[in-house]
Length: 363
Image (cartoon, rainbow, N blue to C red; front, side, top):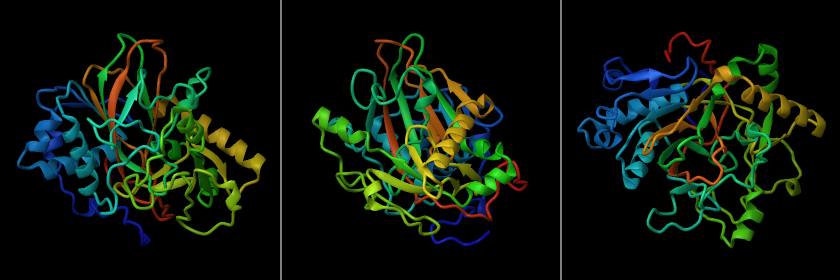
């Protein structure tokens, strides 16, 4: 595989053995679909708090991180994990799979102050905190598909969400596999996309922050994730000229990215934040993005839907999975705490493989 100055995509798999995976694989679990999502079935044997306290904790957490990187999202019912343990788990999952030492936990740019939780915890709430109400047009549910914080110069790796309050019915979350989205593209179209970069914009947060009287958070988990105007530009593979006036709360990424843990290619665009493909004309960009976002939202065979229970935990990998909440519960309460780890700068290695094409790595 061609060397990269950012990360080596298969660095961890080179030393992984079946013995290392024994701890995780011996615990009752079920794949929710062939392409994405795994559920640990018994809360008595899969308490994350106990895994963190285990003498073999580093191996267990490393195996968990690899499982999430392969499966996109993993579910744990009825968890007693505390918020501090949730933060520790997010840190260790990244650290044990090669996260740069400069990366920590993300602070959402418009997260309200929650002193009892800390600035690196986002409250996902229908009653307050960070909510997509008013941000996404609720006349079309598919508009909500996104990965966490792709607009940051150094975006997210793992996210951990624990739901504390749920409606009796509704409020499910869906995830989609970026691996499978890539694999379902025709080879010619996938090749065409390899040379393109996309702009991810969060400029809609700015008026929301002003309206709510919030100060944009600075130092958001990485030295480069700074600035009160959320302005960033990145050239992960090659330089492309662009008018700097056009950039506002934006980041330029490759349309495809190589996952640094699995080495798989993944499609990396979404409906919520991706606004432009730089190398194309405005009309071409609009048409290609419309196709790609439909490609994700309309292919239900690359998605998994999860119905939450109280204190359930989901852990997902933003480098290979998108997600969206379902706002179908009216005025009912729905609330949870989310912790987001910062990963590495996205990169694309043309020598990396798609998940389907891989013969040496097993899902």
